[in-house]
Image 1 (cartoon, protein in one colour):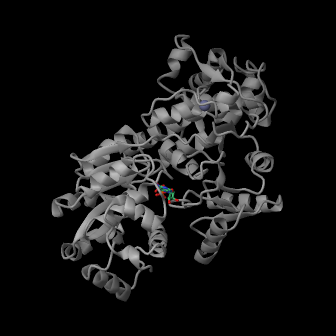
Image 2 (cartoon, rainbow, N blue to C red; image 1 turned 180 degrees about the vertical axis):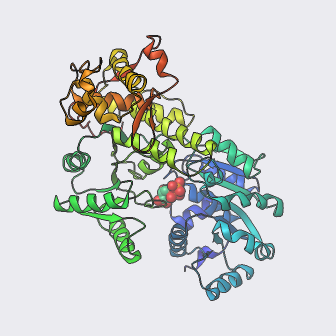
Image 3 (tube, rainbow, N blue to C red; image 1 turned 90 degrees about the vertical axis):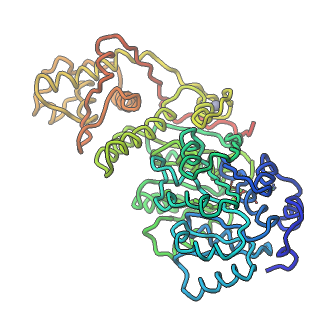
Length: 527
Ligand code: ADP
Ligand code: ZN
């Protein structure tokens, strides 16, 4: 640990230049820091990479006492403390991975006034109360504050107990930070943490150097490989998959194709996981194939692409994961492939999952917003920012801006599909999944069609004008628009309350044409 840094800084700017070696604050950092240094509460909504950490680290070096940071991720805590110690900041953490002796030593240093910053896992707060009572506290920082939101995408029960901080230490300023900024989350953070008097700082969520692209899934791995080879050869990237199995398979396949890819998921041996993460962070051009467990707090500036091979469960998750690309401000790609199967699977996961009706409604809302982003014919960025409450103009740097999709009147195909479902239900008390329904529409001659006598249905072959893959795209879009729903565990399709208006010809259906080949990779430009 360094020497000079342990002394308190006279001003925030002095701390910034002396300890971090930066010359100026970014965005709203200075205002936020002044607020906390003056002893007032703040709520900070800032995108990933925006520079949230300095907002509580700098005041901890200016105010008397120790800055206490509540952070939900033990691995992240460790990294942050390491980085601070390298800068000469006297930092430590308390969490469940430590031995009693290690914890005692940290407690001793805190009480002796030898710590500028103390990182604490939320579940340790109740047991650490008496300890914190005995030490001068500079501030409380509540990182990843959206974890307090019970209906959000990342709820952690331990966060609910953080409301006691304001009651127990009323004179100590609190700063709550998150990169999730829907209006609802914001209100929930204020409410549950009792931050009614806090000033709320909302930064722009735009990441202009990230090019957003969402493509229909054909052969996802091959589509991905083409993007890596054509646009990001030899560059670092993150590929997200839903299951551990597909993580392993994708990583192995990419390696066969000559991409330096490593897997990362919670089921891997801890030493392998650490080694793979280390390679990704320290070496150039390593591609990590991972479940979403990977990346929280990963601060690698030159990640050139983030690819999703499976549909994220929420826009918040999508934004956070794609936000790991291009922290250095250089042009980067966020690419997502999704298909009919993703929609069916996610809907089914919600239906079969634990939780009460309210929780399921909430998950459905999250998924619907994500699907709306996937199916939009408008600018993706505009829609993404609007979701976070930020109005904007079409960006010119997303797939829909660069190659606007054709929208067409899909009312007639939608009616053909919906009426096939209705007839099967009414006339035969049967329901089927997408594959068989499409077979009926295109008039396929399969064993199943013959066995069920479906070649005698009035709707058999009425969709011959369109090819099978296009029909699957239509099914997917109708699912996304809430005009179809998945029922039961076999992916059986059923109509919804809204479909009757379509069948009655009272509601038109807009659909997007899918390019036969993936949308042409746009110029890599940040503006
Ligand atoms: P967040 O927590 O919001 O995702 P970080 O606090 O990790 O973001 O900051 C992202 C990166 O930006 C870090 O590498 C950090 O050192 C850098 N950074 C933050 N503020 C400044 C600044 N004022 N000047 C230069 N670099 C900064
Ligand atoms: Zn756009």
